[in-house]
Amino acid sequence: MAQVTEPMAARTRRRSRTTGWSLTRRGQRLAALAFLLIVGWAMLVQGNAWLANRSIAATVPQGENILRLAVSGLRGELARYERLPDLMARSPVLTRALDPDVTQADIAAANLYLRHVTQLMGLSDAYVMTPDGTTVAASNFDQDLSFVGENFEYRPYFRDALAGMPARFFALGTTSGKRGYYFGAVVRDRGRILGVLALKVDVDAIEDSWRAAEYEMIVTDSEGIVFLASRRDWQFRSLNPLTPQARARVAATRRYDDEPLTVLPLRPTGTVGAHQTLRLDLPGAHREFVAVSEAMPEAGWTVQVLLDTAPARRQALTAAVAGLLVIGAALAGLMAWMQRRARLRERLSIQAEAQAQLEGRVATRTAELAQLNARLEAEVAERRATEAELRRTQRHLVQSAKLAALGQMSAALSHELNQPLGAVRNFAANALTYIDRGRVPEARDNVSRILSLTDRMTEIGRTLRNFARKPNAQLSEVDLHDVLRDALEVIAWRIGKREVDLQVDLPPGPLIVRAGPVRFQQVIVNLLSNALDALEGQPDATIRVSAQSASDHIVLSVEDNGPGIAEGLEDRIFDPFFSTKGVGSGLGLGLSISFNIIKDFGGELRLVRQPRGACFRIHLPRIGEPA
Ligand code: ADP
Image: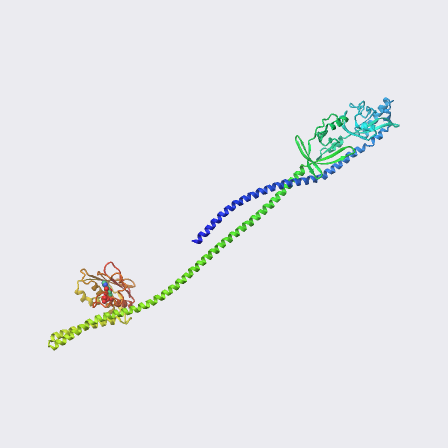
């Protein structure tokens, strides 16, 4: 019982331990999951930013190439016309047109010349001005927006040229409304300044080549105003709010005429390497660029290529997500592996625990068995000792019983023999006296009494001889009917004397058994005479002798309705010399002799318990088939 309850309690303890443990483990798992999510998110954000930076940086060389091409294109465009003004300014056609004595023909010639060169060189406009800035001849003389008569004294290219400086200027044409790059050159006649020649180069064509590209391109002037842009709506917008001074400077030269010059919402957000990232927030267009820029000091410009970062960012995000997925998968694999290991460990520990428990139980059981064994051995030893003691006691008892039997026998014999001997002595003495007195009849009577007494003593001697009989004397097949008839004859004298109802009930036909006929008869006489003794003085005395025949044996019963055998004496009545009858009435050998005789016949004599009286049964093997 102890082994049963102890492991159960242990199991309960373990289960409760397991529950608590699993609760904390669930908490730990949740915390770990949250931590992993946070780490994953941080990694995604950081990794994405890093990858985006790298991807964007990877686009920079492309931007630099584009920028280089664009700048050299611009430079080439400007260089193409650099020397042209000085060359043209030496033309006599123009000197004549600026001469104070100019004729209509001279003006017409100059107009034609300017138009010719304009067409030839692909210029936008070409015109000449007097030293006060008034245009006298122009390539567009015959057009609606002719410059002839217009005054451009305020333009820097005019002023610089007059001052003998290189005159270049970018501006929005105040008359034409078209942007252009202006070159100025002074026209002299033998050292005397006659006026200024101006050429305007169209920049629209340059800009056109930038459109529909995957990048944006802007060219800003020294004030940070965008004047060339791949997108039209970015033109004439400043990158930074203009200071009043800057506005005044721009207004003085009427560079951008009346354009409002609003701010282009392109603000820097960070850097990628040495390059700035810019964010554009126009209604309906939120874009981010990385700016690659180069200054063109000869023109006072800054050229910027704006590369859209969206594709790079998309690529980076894809890579980051893929990377995270790979890491996640690897982590999941790692966790699964660790979990499997943990489970395996757990299983092993459970197995070990079970094994230990089993071993413990086996050890306990073994110890118990050993204890039991020791106890059994002790018991066996004790039993052996008891047995030996018993045997010893038995031997003593047998010895005592023998002695007791001898004692009983000698007592019985001396009683049985002393009485008649005493009587014989008395009768003999009396007979002597009667003979002396000559009273012969009395003497004779006494002698005959002596004779009967000696007969009785002879009878006692015979009984004793029978007791000491030789077993296994000659047996023969006898019929029970015959044996019973002879026995009844022998005992008839006793029955005749008494009022006893003798009932004999034997089945018809021979009842053959193997027996010594005289001894068998003696047994039956014995049983009958015991019954008669028991029925002494009983009014309704009945003796019943019956036999039952079975296929292999015959049972003969002798029963009476006397007082029966007293309780506790059943075992003793078959003992030799056991008798309840008074001295002189029985030797106590009858049942003992009968028992042994029947045993010699291969049968059995038993006392059968019944409500009233005694019943003795003789079982004998049957010879021959029943009739
Ligand atoms: P004995 O007849 O000399 O006493 P037995 O051996 O024949 O010796 O019988 C032993 C005792 O068994 C008797 O003394 C008697 O007490 C008892 N006994 C035997 N037969 C009967 C019987 N039919 N009814 C009652 N007692 C009996």
